[in-house]
Image (cartoon, rainbow, N blue to C red; front, side, top):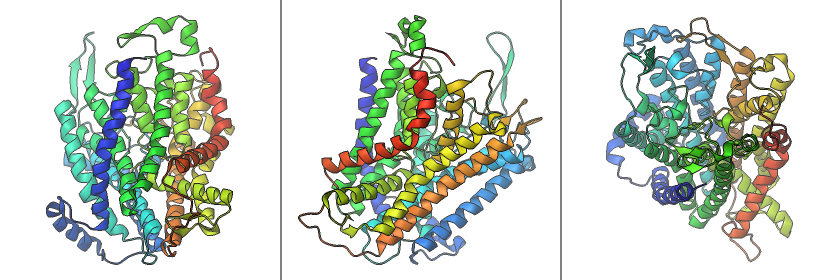
Length: 590
């Protein structure tokens, strides 16, 4: 551990908070229809979009109509993406397939389409050896925008349901989606892409370069429109890499500055949405309380990960490797990490992308120490409430807020109320289902994979066995259920002997089970969140009394953290004991 390492974490938190507050104010103006400085650029495209979609943006929707529009929109997007992936060679005439890659297998395409539509971006393939530029741009990058937009609009709809006083309308899905893409994601992505190009990311449509390496052996250097995809990949908490090595690749993440910058980009919208919520609720302290909850848990995860990796593993100590010099300091686990990022930059990046649904990685998570590797497990076990994905994090933690209010109300013997609205049996049933559906999906998929021969076919037993093999399987389905997309490596769903998909085959069990894992765990909580919003939207607001439990103070923050940890511990702790924790308690190498 070094002073500069701790300063990196502190500086990151300070800058994130400083940027998130004004961005949150901007988002509040976008979704309440107030004037913004970007209106002159996007008002005309917005009207054109409504004409093409044939929708009336002033026509408010209740939760059922809002959900139906969202499902139809997502289904059409899935079909189009699957079609693009399955017909990759037909688009050669565009010039955007310079390597003439064939389409991947049907089961891989199913998994990939499900992955990118759900904002998961789980990848069983290497981007530079599998997909054409057309598939990367028109297929994946477009879904990076749209899937991020879906998460944001659900959060906005839930906010309207909680704070609304004018009936059951949650707004209009089509208007919210159009404004999200035009006013939020597009301008921010352009700025981010320009910064990445300035720092060294590539943006071209060139043929791959053939060069002789320093050993004299020939090799290919992949090219492509990387910066534009990298921008929305990070901003939309998507995480799918243009290259197989993701954000460890110098074309995606060239410098220490871009590493820090990309971490801010990942968390800026999830953090800003919390402040947006406080503004739309008419009580900024509500947003501050939720932000404090998220930040306390985030700092805990970042601190544990950094200390664990800086200390090294028991096996490294037994071998005397803990005294090695790493990034200018003695000790630490540099295995699987880029030296240009160091231990602090790698550990913090890992935490940032696993508390969200981003899943981008700049280091190999499976090479972390037992305790350091347990941190991403724990982050995913929190079910996207520590900032979470764009939109997903806010509506997920608001479900926990309602549950904490209900528990707190029962403890003091009063009818639970939140912002003046009574929380009754119907809302709590919906909240409970919305909270539990993701962990149940992950655990069920893991049990099916570990108990079946077809599931074990995805594990290379020559490399991984015992707790490591279980960790790889459990992490795969936990990551997919949480729409995260990061991997503990080793768990395979696609065997590709040659670049370009020639002779490749998918592992059907892993591809199909993972695809349904992602789809169900994405849309079931969304439907429950919208149902909660619809139930609250029509409720009357009662004035606060002397006995009303406050939800904007330290006491409630502690209660909320306790509820989140309790549910996560009861749900996942036994599984964690079988994998990363037992590895952290032994000097044996698996």
